Image 1 (spheres, rainbow, N blue to C red):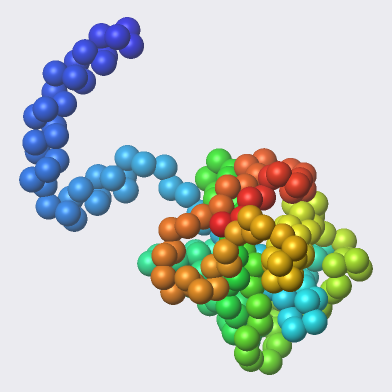
Image 2 (image 1 turned 30 degrees about the vertical axis):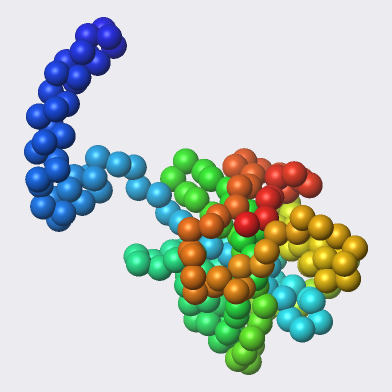
Length: 208
């Protein structure tokens, strides 16, 4: 059955391709949008202050007994960097620079990116509609968190440690920070853990 179907499709493929090539962009876009699955894209990450403390939140609409990373959902036309900057500004009144892409993971209809960033301006002021509490934590004194989020934070500090080692000339092979290309190439992404549960191991979250 499958072989016969392939043969039939192969026969009509040249005509379909010819029609597709001359179709207007709006029609091709509409067809592509209709026949493909829709995916939500989430962006969050480890946001650090000058003391290398990480900013964590208790979200009103999540489990309020655990702490999470700042972030939100990608809007149409945004890059993942733009999304994170917008969400942090809206929810926390802070400006940030993106330093690295830490990892990503995928679910059935969701793709999540996790970034490393630095606070560059603003004064912390939470949006009370979505955020219950925001606090800075040192890496050795983290509050209750989901295991994957803890893994993202650990990966962020491993990245920082590697950068400090490289700066002193004792290390090599550390990936380049994306800070210098924050407004340049937006397509360089990292491989990461695609599981729904568990934290990030040493090899799961790869640098950008």
